[in-house]
Amino acid sequence: MKIRLITFLTLLLGLFLTGTAPALASDDYLTPYDGLLAQYVKPGNKDGINAALVDYRGWARDPRHLQAMVSLQKANPETLISREEKAFWINAYNLLTIDLIIHHPDIASIKDLGNLLQSPWKAYDWKIGGHTYTLDDIEQRILRKRNDPRIHMAIVCASLSCPDLRNEAYRADKLDAQLDDQARRFLSNPAKGLKVMPSGVILSPILKWYAEDFGDEKGVLAFVAHYAVGVPTGATIDDYFTYNWNLNRP
Image: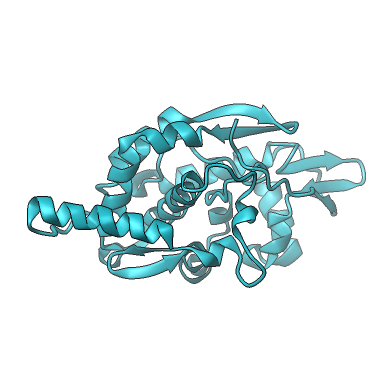
C-alpha cells in the first residue's frame, strides 16, 4: 500500500541519518499529535449537523503529522498496561484514520476507500512496534476486548455522524473523565447522538451496531439514561438516525 511505502521510506531515512533505530517511549507521539488536534479540529456545522470538523488539508501540510506518525509507529505498546494501553490505542485509531484521509484528499467519504472485497477499515494497514495492524484490528481485536462501551464514543471514523474527534489527545491520567465527557457530548447532540421524542428516543446507529458491548438494548438504554439529560424513565428506542458518512471536514 502507498501509505506503508511512505512510512517505510520515512523510517529508512531516520535510520540513515542517525545510524540507529532508537526505541521511543510509547507517549512520544503525544506532543505533536496534541498540537495538531488543538490547531486543526474546530466546532462547525455541516449537512445540518453540529460537529467537530477537521482541516485535513492543513493537517497534511504540518510536519508534526510525520513526527507523530514516526513516534507512534516506533512505540512499543506491549509495555503498556491498563489505561495507558487503552489511551494509546484510541489515539492510534484516530491518528491512523487521519493519516488515511490525508493520503486520499479528494474523497468525499471514508467509504470511498473500500471495495467489494474489503472495507477501508480492513484494506489499509500500518506497522506499530513491529506488528501490522488495520483499523479493524485495533477496534475489534484490541479496543472492544477492553469491555468499555465508552470507547465507541472516542474512536472516530472521519464521518459527520461519528462522535466528535476530541481536540486533545487521550491520556491515561485523565482517561475516565475524557471518556465520560465524550459520552455526554455525543448524547447531547440531537442531530446524531440522541433525540428525545414523545414516542421514545432516536439514537445513533452506533448504539445498534455495537449493542452487545452495552449489554444489548436494555444496556443501551441504561447507558443513555446515565449519560444523557432529559431521558424519561422507561423510555424506549423509537428509531435510529440515518448515518451520514460524509467526511467531517469543513
